[in-house]
Image (cartoon, rainbow, N blue to C red; front, side):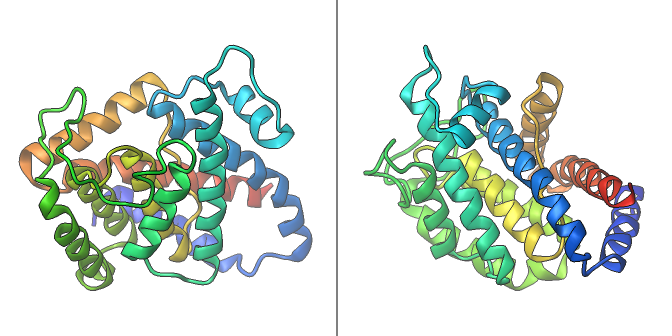
Length: 252
């Protein structure tokens, strides 16, 4: 087993030993989780080009304020992402498995009021990924490919280390590119649903220049080699950060 996975397993074991968390600690963590939700939404949207800053995202989500000079679409992306993220937490809390119906529900929330004609529906037209050499498969193949992906996750995927299963799910969704828009945001939600239901904290991929570059580079490497290792390694590093951050709060 590689060093990243060994570290992840050690931190996850410590987290499991601390469960169930005392009610007072759960209450204290509520504010931290609320801030983390805003942070997750900001980072995931910013990766896709949303222009709201972290502070502006907080104003939109927690105070219901509109930010002057910013497009309505950017506001909707923030509020939609919150609805999808909260639904994600509800699904994880009851141990809901990843499925096509769950995926389409989350995607429908992401594009609600932005592109209702395609919200919660697989694409029917060809798409290209800006800046990428990979050409997604023909739209006619998308339903079968997504059905196979869900079946894989419920079988072979569950026998993988949880972090590798989550990484492979994200990579394959990005590879298939099943939607006209919202693919990245939905893939990151799907990855986190898999991790959350297996007892991991929320994992955030950040929009800062170096991390976004590494993120897209790892996806491109996996596509070019048709091997999951480059993207698995990237996601391992992100899960290490999320576990370290979460345990840091518990240790205080």
